[in-house]
Length: 194
DNA sequence: GGTAGGATAAGCT
DNA sequence: GCTTATCCTACCA
Image (cartoon, rainbow, N blue to C red; front, top):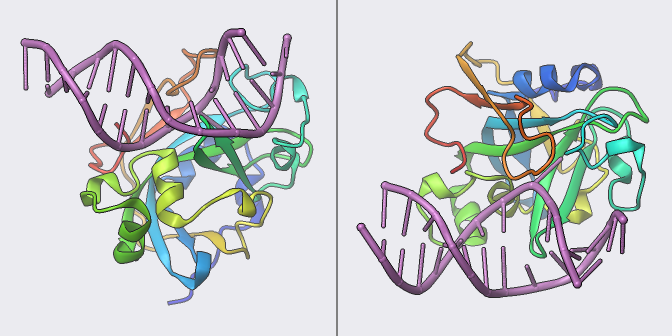
């Protein structure tokens, strides 16, 4: 079934709104021609030049974070801790460095491919963290700056998306801006991180 | 059940 | 030199 990718206008809104509305939508990867997909169950908002935890803090543009300043609906993929990739969806206006970090998925399609990339782990461990889901989907820096509307990675609307309770907490793994409530989870989902 | 520590490298000061 | 939007293993309870 062919489903429409979320349009740029979806992302061209306040980042915390986008982070909430991405919960329940479907992320599809066709890296190496292998279809892998999952439902987004956990996100975090990084909200621009005034957010001390955001890579775009003080609007400092570097080679690493360049795509964070790109058009809404762009993939921002960065490398961290010497071995892990993380995937974000760029939000708001061109030139405004903000994005939603995709932190966990409920695996839906391509279990064999995910397990080949991730190792023989329980289903719960396939995509329950930002670096885990990148490994499961084959996401690396090659996809940084690509479109989430028509690229190898796409986010599509789930026509059967339920209206579900959302839990809001502070963000994880940061040392500045620690009390800002910008992490969003589908309440009761067994697929979230940690 | 829980958590401390190590892996490992780019980017920043 | 130090920090980092993480994960896994080893070890303790």
